[in-house]
Length: 209
Image 1: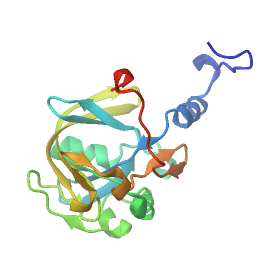
Image 2: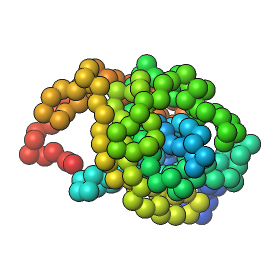
Image 3: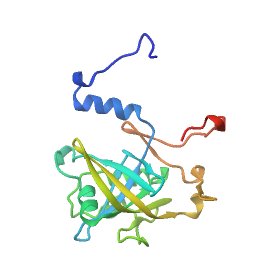
Image 4: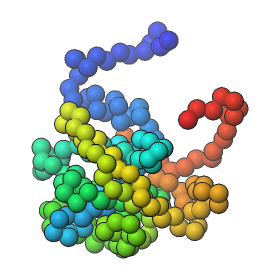
């Protein structure tokens, strides 16, 4: 039960932006999906999204939520969504702390013809199962083929099936586990970012998945 000093906010009393701020400030930390995609004309795109999670174990499926364009491109469809819809393939690159500034550069609103790998200052690396490159500098990259796109209000849920995973040897702990203390994942925190703090465990009998 909330305490006596708890504040309550009803959706009908809030603007879209006010509710959005409450959500992104509460649902934290969020991993960042640094998505590389390619237009039907072959132009490379790279952009970060923090509405990102695992959707299914079998088939292995990752979920991202892509909203409409903002700022000077408000109300438009983001290039990432257009590319995924038209090409059907993309890569989710995981962002480490050292890649934070490059990731931030790729979040700028630029014309669709701009190669955002160049803007971010990172290197395309050929994928093996799809035709879209990964970020060479990323510690982990998931090669995905589009499963489906589900409209939700003004946003779109994008479900992609993992075809192949690239893991840098320094980020691999063996037995199909990653060494998070080595690759230092970066998380989104309501406009700011956070790194990984010391980890700890609870009683395995009470473990939640």
